[in-house]
Image (tube, rainbow, N blue to C red; front, side, top):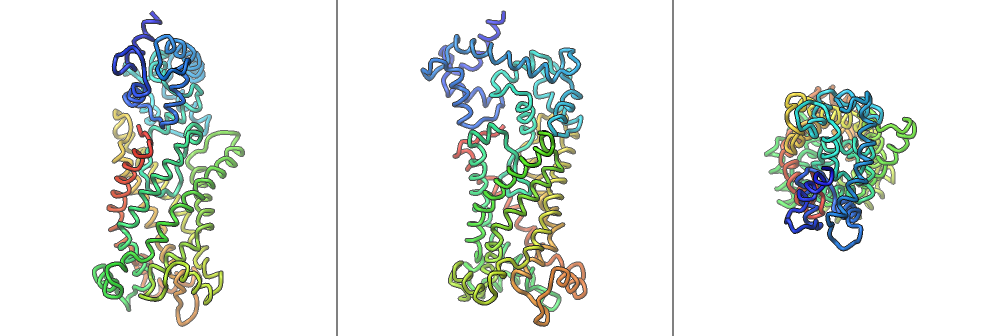
Length: 459
């Protein structure tokens, strides 16, 4: 009976029904079973089955591996079955995830159970656990839970306030750098396509006021008249170039901060509050490293025709005039803006996803478009909350003074409120919103194509 069951599994994987499982069969089977893997993971896992290394898996090799693998799966099942009744229920899932530092609602736990539950009992028995995970690369309950949780979210490729979490398998397989490269390509194309809106936003931030009202159409006309069509892309080059160091530093800093926090958290995985703190710290570190590029981007975006001959000329001229400290104008204001943006972005994203899961408990998981919408709304809310700080930062980067007096953060805030009211803190918000839809759409489409070229599989 046991041999017959394993033979049936073998036939499910033998896509072309030739009595052998090749890597192509194996890849298609993993996709059909909704098991997300990278190319390296598939090849490594396939090699475990292929004992004689002849490039195919025969029935004997398959039976040998499955029997050994299922011993480990039984141990992981028993560790989740706390009351030893032979079933894993929602409470046991919640308690197990809580032990590794992951807080989820009952609705989310039920949703996870339904991925394996074949008879709609809202519990998982041994047969369901074994059949669902018989091709799982890991038998460790912590790794399985992480993978379980990871399958409920998706990377849209947009620059995030809090970087994405990767499992040890993803870090070792190289999946993490493929995600970063795909995100970098998507960000570069998206920023280039929406650069005119970004330059208009900066123009309104720095120069618009009640005495000098600049509207969207009027702003575009002025920029084109002053420097031609190509002037709409001023500052875009360095804005694209800084994606690489900013993303790399943020990722490395986030991983290191997480490790320190896990050590201080008795080895438990980080919850949402810890992720926010780690993400904010990583953002602060990455901004410190690349902040001079931020200043150069603002100066180059708002330069007059013929003022600078390029990035190096711009850096040389502002250094000669104001010294090295000019490259950190608005630095403190920028750091203060990270906290409300990261906190609101993460909190709203998690809440929107939670509402969706509770409203549609029968659906296996939020689709990519749902998660894209959640990410767009949450990042927009975070941007609105931190916008006044971004506006003052831009003024400080451009050395905007009042009566030839350079103002501090508090000084700019008081002056804007006294002369323009709260509305003055949101100059340029309209073009910022206008670029959100095309930026996210372009980034998503490019990311999808880039990840496929790089061999990144998504569930």
